[in-house]
Amino acid sequence: MLVSAKDMLNKARDGKYAVGQFNINNLEWTKAILLTAEELKSPVILGVSEGAGKYMCGYKTVVGMVNGMIEELNITVPVALHLDHGSYEGAKACIEAGFSSVMFDGSHYPIEENVAKTTELVKTCNELGLSIEAEVGSIGGEEDGVIGAGECADPDECKAIADLGVTMLAAGIGNIHGKYPENWTGLSFETLAAVKEKVGDMPLVLHGGTGIPEDMIKKAISLGVAKINVNTECQLSFADATRKYIEAGKDLQGKGFDPRKLLAPGFEAIKATVKEKMELFGSIGKA
Ligand code: 13P
Image 1 (cartoon, rainbow, N blue to C red):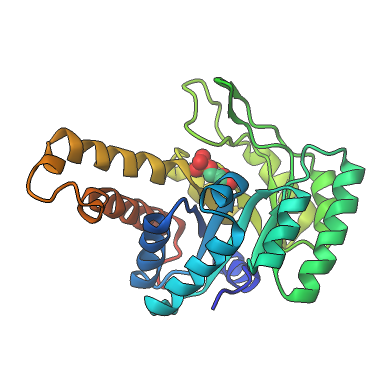
Image 2: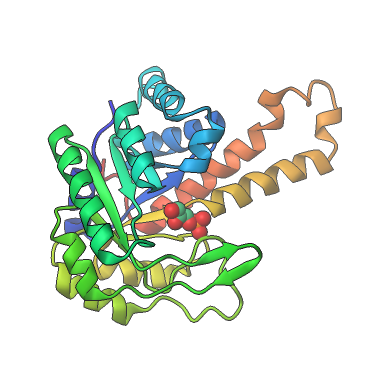
């Protein structure tokens, strides 16, 4: 059964570790992440962007697949199914479809509008026992080939949004989605500490987990980050393993073209990446 991310994140905050949010793209991704979490007895959050939701034939298909796998694979660790960077409409659709957690990314709205929309969604999520993530300060990343720097959130705006009763808060601290550029100046721990000071117990979320050096991840966790999102790194490992398989000509040997064989190295590569992250985040054995 899917659970809200609330308990797992409060425990992570108290225990000074972080729960990984791993974004899913298809059946292989989902199975790899769930099996790794179960093997390592780690709580886990499956992230679904609106684009990935569309790709997987809609939120209802995703809910059906994830619930089916939890049952058929005997997954006993806590699993939250979470909408990543949701619009207001997307969040409502996911709530309706059976997600256990949503992110409403109102960071591009003026703060008043972000507050109004977040307030309404918090009310709905509370009534249904779902968790909700909000964002302040936009997370940079690559758009049309230009890599934008990650914004640093205003701690007072973070406090205003945290006070609306969200479960967890993503604050921009110079982090960006995708690979980090050569000239990236690193996470702003000053901003993180200032945000933490204002929001108190609220579990903080670090987006753009791909490529952040280990020491920065550990420091971020020590300063209140309880959830770390990883997407690109699993995509890179999957692509790399699949390319090696094809380049070695294995798809041309025997039944190597069978998708169950062709996609197996990529599947194993996702498992290895998820394991590495869970070790780094400290969530192993915390289920
Ligand atoms: P990366 O793709 O950089 O790992 O970021 C993932 C993320 O933050 C999803 O919200």
